[in-house]
Amino acid sequence: MKTKWMSLIIVIGVIFAMITFISGLLPSFNRVNEEKSISLDNVDEIQVILSSETVHIHRSESGGEVRFHYHGNCWPKFNLAIENANGKVSVRRESLVRLGDMTLDIYLPADYSETLDVKVSSGAVTTESFNLENFRMNASSGNLTVDSIKAAFVSIRSTTGAVDVKSINAERLAITTHSGNITTGQCAVREAVVEATSGNIMLTGVTGNFNLKTSSGKVTLSYPMFDNYKLKVGTTSGSVALELSASAGFLLDAHSTSGKIQSDFSVDNAEGANIKGITGQVGIGTGNITVNTTSGNIHLRKER
Image (cartoon, rainbow, N blue to C red):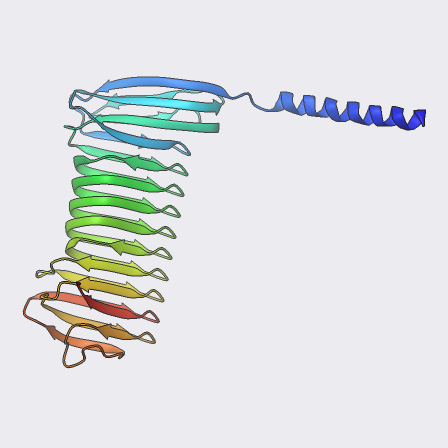
């Protein structure tokens, strides 16, 4: 009996020693709380390139500086690398390898109106309302959330993360995702290309010319007023639902290989018919709507 107790004590001691040894090998996380301010004199672009950090872009009072607040726990300990040269403020982190949970808060003056370019790998990005020349946001697996953005050019790219924009006003708009959903509130543009592979596209309050493409994702689009615009939608297995004002006038060309087509509008006496193709004029207007699907259903609804 005494031998068994001794063996048990030895085993427990060995386990404790191993835990202590392994714990000593594990990294000790460091607290980082760093703030830097950069003058915006003669700056026409702010570029942020990070990895798994969460990025929040805040709208601050008008002023001549942008402020960066980098905080959290990480290993190894490092700081931001900020460079201001040739009209560009570039923000990166010093270490390529890191563990931990870090956040970058950017306080951008409301009167900054040039280019903002943010690229992250797995971190999420949120931004408040801004009026810019160019707005570019790129993420791999992190979600992208935008309050309101007005710019001549807006580009948003995501792989698996969702894209959610409350309001967009742009001359040119480009949004691309792989498996993430794309959702917008008011979306006023001159030209837009929106593409998703397996993610859904849901755009409301739309004005402008749109080219939408998906593979297996659904497309839901609403035009409060369809006025001489061009809309092109193409899907493979995803369904398409378009909501238009009852007074909308346009030339319709809709086709589906194995899906059904339903229209609340009178098109060549095919109103409400479940058929494979509809081509014809709706009302009076020079707008143009082209919809093609393989197995997805198509439904044109009148706004209620």
